[in-house]
Length: 251
Length: 251
DNA sequence: GAGTGGTCTAGACCACCCC
DNA sequence: GGGTGGTCTAGACCACTCT
Image 1 (cartoon, helix red, strand yellow):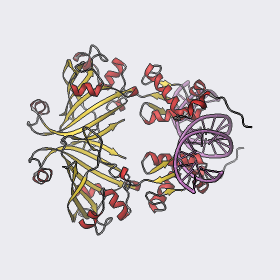
Image 2 (cartoon, protein in one colour):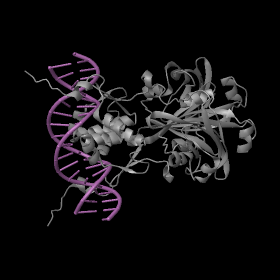
Image 3 (tube, rainbow over the protein chains, first blue to last red):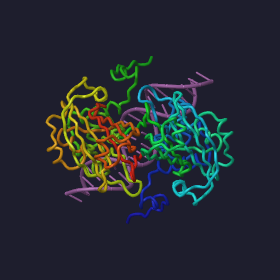
């Protein structure tokens, strides 16, 4: 007669198997959400985490590897593992795919147009998982590359998550919006989905990008997500693709 | 007194360190280039490869993991590790990012316009690493989604690598161009770079996409690479983004 | 049941960083 | 020199597939 093992882990493991490193990954993510380790800070060493979770170093390693592959953690040999941040100059414009056709990628200068409060339309409410006509805050800006205004965009954020957002505050902050949201609201964007279309410039876009009405523009709709795949930002960018283009790698 | 180990590997390892699994990865890639394992076939088991290269299974595993992450190999638990192929229905249109705004991704029908021989212009010669005005073969087609012509594109290939390409041959083949190139010329595309712009439809595009001249179109330039990051295809697609858009994930 | 990939462990040693 | 991540190994066991 074989013994019947009474092991709660083994019992729950058999149907729909979940590897240990995956569970560790979830625990690490929860600590990140809870703010146990803040953006830019180092998390405990692999050995410490192995002791904490009572698993081997190799298992912790696999969990961290997965988070590093998603750009949520950053490994630095000899120094430690750090919580990724949009604040570092190198990662300021991590999600910006517009680059010059010739020469190196460079960062734009931002010129803000206005900050307004309003209600989410159907499309945005659906994208951000909000109730219809939930309060939202919109930021409109122009991004200027090498002296040329190239992108006109509108960033829409749920007011509940980002209260008291004003033009003054956002103008004071240097750098990208994500850097600002991170330092001001502790909200970190970890991934985004984009949809691209070609559209004709309307009057407003034509003025701000200094082109004729009807000029073809690249329209980039984005939904950005924070930890746990929660959508927290919708934006639409209208981009003049002259000398610049949207770069993408397919694998 | 400590012994001085005489180890040729260790000696060459110190300046500009290269991990073992990286070297194994290179050896595997060379075997793929040499055609030792053809697309769709299984490569030897991890244990066999470990014996062949005289390393541990874990090291072979890391090398295979890297190639699997690049979609060059495909792991299937319980069955083996296989050479990826564009021939399988699921991967036929792996690089196609145009999907409907509502509903699931679906495959287009192809309608070929013509196949011509010509000389590479400066842009294409540079992209494909060819001599100026090297002979190239161009294929023009229209991709039709759910009955609507949405993409007009031109595929440019070096004639030296793809000899005797005719309209008849390519029309006989079902499915994507990459599937055709793989079965006919044994050339496998493993990754691609794209640049997107918004342009106005010219006369030719307007006719084939059934729109007015001047309609904004998404222009997608692509360079596709085979093993060893060798560029072997240039293409330009003009895409009508009505009800469809170019989908991309940022991480 | 045999074979494959997938997980987990434990330990040794290396490369890198900073004190 | 001590700490961190990175590599490599060897072995045990689990999950999946096919016969």
